[in-house]
Image (cartoon, rainbow, N blue to C red; front, top):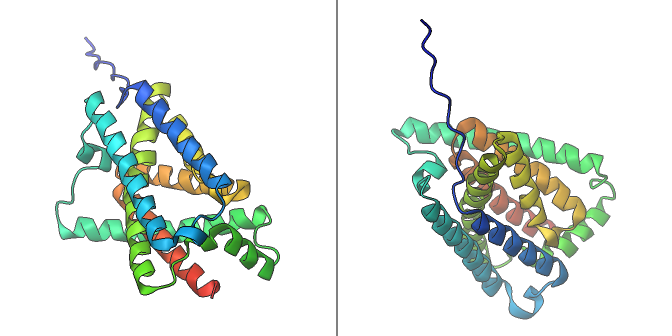
Length: 242
């Protein structure tokens, strides 16, 4: 007599559906306003800009954490992916994050080339100044705060997009791939201030992070790579835009 294993229970939503809808709408509004606002730093300075960016990120993180608590399906630790049992686990994930970052740079470089974003030389530098120059740190205080912004973005955005949105839509659709695609789309759309071409490139970048999170069953390597990438990009832009 064959003994059949019980069917696997479908994944449950990790938060109420209304909570997810509100989050996506708010992200969309912030992205739209960021695309239309121009460069407020010229009037306010970089320090308040950086501080406000971190406040917004942590408020979004707190909102997501509240939704997860209401859902009662996963804890914060489970969302991130357990814990490191020994030093070797930590070093392994640093190595994975570094390798992922290098691969992602290659993929992004190919994507930028295919979209014609690498042509023009000096023209591209001028475009970068126009789009991202208002965020580039210049003083020692701004550099220190920029690194804090990068660390905040690495932790909060990976938790929100790859931890929360990806899992939530995988549960709603009962399909992991759909969750990866939706979280990547939302991630790209959330960067409206960078323009349509860069938003498409950010979608690709987000999908790479989604794949990493799914393969590793952990957000930690993605958080490391994300934070390092943002910090590195700001410092390189600082050199280029002098």
